[in-house]
Length: 386
Image (tube, rainbow, N blue to C red; front, top):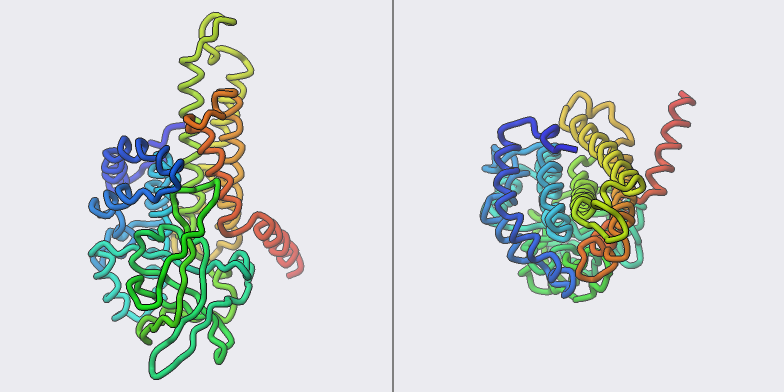
């Protein structure tokens, strides 16, 4: 299906054309990034230099002021070049978008951090911990923050800190005992007591280098206390997290394109013509495009509703449902693509095996499938009870 259907503004078209100029370089690095589990620093730096990392910053702060729909369109394209690059920069885009759109901080602090972003700062949330599981399930952080002499002292260890080699800041969650809730603190990565423990050893998204972030008596000023939450932050409506399904949709598109190209070019001597003429291959390709169509329309419809302040008020479980639908569709799409290509798709030099591994990571990004389904059921039952 044509992406032209979803490009509706001059700004979107301008940035899609800009990102296309990076396609060859990003695609060329993807295999080595995966094989060596090495973070694609050059790709991220190219995006920063291009001005991409400041797009989700509102215009009043000097940024691009793009919408969630704009973001997922661009994120999908980057991820189709390389999933690790797409997911990594997506976390930054989403955190900045959420931080400013929801004005989670005092205005003078937002202005202060905006200057950092405009100068190339990269940020991600650091909320996952080995003992709590997914942060959206409401587990209490083992990382702690204690007020001392007018500042905060943070101790703990976070895992799955994507983009760790180049992060300049992390938005760290920590339990505040005296307030019986979770605080979120902006931590400068150059602060004394901050270190990275290289623990990332996964088969999926290897290039994200999502190592552990270690905080050993890290001092944080009161001004960098961003937000406080008495319950799981995942309960709040945050459309900027749609960068997650956009990433896996991009990978699925890449798998589809590879499979179709292979089908129209591969001609074994057992048949006349190419395998694209075989009914079973056409069936796979047809199902792939149908899955892509359903997933993409669902995702962009939900993003559009979120971008409209009036429609957003009526939203309930759509954000989680979009992530569930798109991620699982991406897994099916890559599977079908590998069936088209056959055993060659398992060769380590073939990108399909990387796509196959990378899309599985989507199942473990928030929110989890079982939570999405459970919340849909509870919403339906509660709605009928009113």
